Amino acid sequence: MRYGVLAGIALLFLAGSDCSAADLPQAIQRVETETEAPNTTPRERSNSVYFFAGRLSTTSLGSTLRFNLDHPSNEITYDNYIAGAAYTRDIYRLGLGFTLGAEIGGAVRAGSFALCCNPVVKSSSWVNSEELWIGPRISHEGFVFFNTVRLAGATTWGLSFANNSIGYERGREIAWSGSARTLFYFGPEIIVALQQFPDFEFVYRLHHRSGANGKLGNLREGYNANVFGIRYKF
Image (cartoon, rainbow, N blue to C red; front, side, top):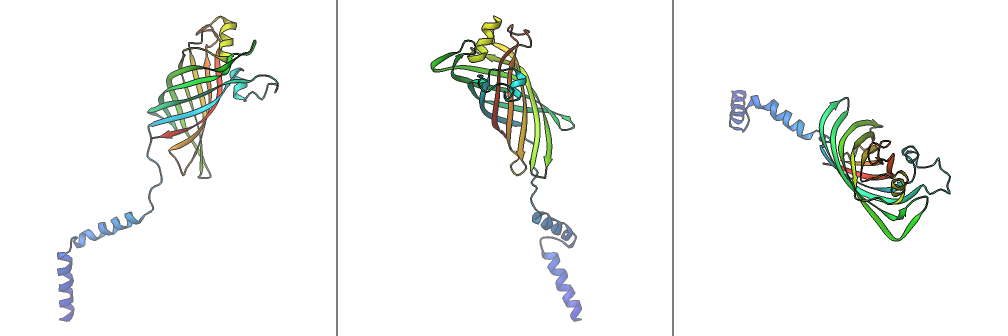
């Protein structure tokens, strides 16, 4: 009789509670889920902004890629400076880790070299030039090493527009009787990111303007630059 009373009390307690006996597994599962470690995998970010700065090179694309270490130290291998920003929008996942996107960017090119390098004309005050580029971008998500560092890459290409030329780009205009106002743009980059901060990337880019052997502006090359910066993804 005593055990029957206890059983009856237990049944009344379950019937009057917020969850029935059938709901107990779901409640237990909910508690277990809430106590699990939070998911640290970042959600996909389709937008990004990239801020950078660097030096403008007086050499070819290949030498600039090698940071002009293949040239004698007494040569002028860098003249003016460049700083700017770019906005990127990822559009379509191509598969195998590749993504197709689009980029638009702008930069200020400035320094004391009005003309370089034969002859060299330096200004008492800084001269400057503005650049705008736009085009498609293909990026790869890269590879993660030691569950800590991600190494990736990307390439942007398209058209680059400048309001005027300074430094070695101006020298190329004179030498080739051409114009660097509208040239092709090419910007391969190396990306390094920490898994702990997935929304930030450290980026090296080779900033290249080219006439593609005279196809635009009657120029072979415009200006090359080694630039470094930080990209924020959102």
